[in-house]
Length: 293
Image (cartoon, rainbow, N blue to C red; front, side, top):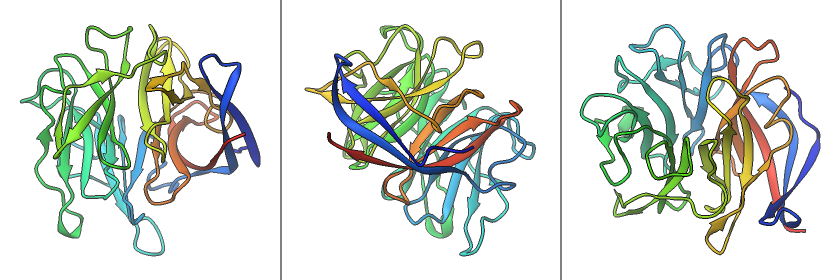
């Protein structure tokens, strides 16, 4: 996948005619770890540890894991990414959407394992010595519901949890929610204020480095409509409706989603995009810059 050397997107708060920021994508998107992470299977939502030595993502059809949806890990030995293996906390059910905390000590993820609130719930697991993982912990009813919760992401300052849910009371479909984290405990979640949430599906969101700006995915419906990535800014605590991002974060060849802030390289996003042959989803990294007009 190729990108323009410098693609500039004017990002506006409501109304769109009043641009407030510039997002500049610089250079070409790079396919991540071909043959190790990016394979003939579907690989989604790449997250990297702050030291850049551990990569996590999930696959929904890669052989070798205990379930259909599994989280995979690869470690860099200083020269190359080592062969990927399923993480120790996978189950025979659905385990997906991993996200490192900014300090690399915790991984947030989703699972439909027994003992949750219902559907897909948000969990976290500690990262222990030598890269081992602890025991998963459900984040509790303040953020989880009987519906599905997807794509948890902790803000760079560790104070806000961002995720999506299709629970009752939203604008429709999956909406984006946030919850304050106080002493490591999630507080009651609320939909993001403003015009971002719609009757469509809003999901797979990440904060950028400022801890406010949000990159997210939107589709009219899961499975039958293209998925595109958008960027939205908050003004006075309220988000605008978002504008579609340029190439390479969106391509005519197919779906693009699963964006994550790369904690190992400032000014870098990871994301998943469908290959040009339409056969599957690969993992990519791309550099960006933000500036004011």
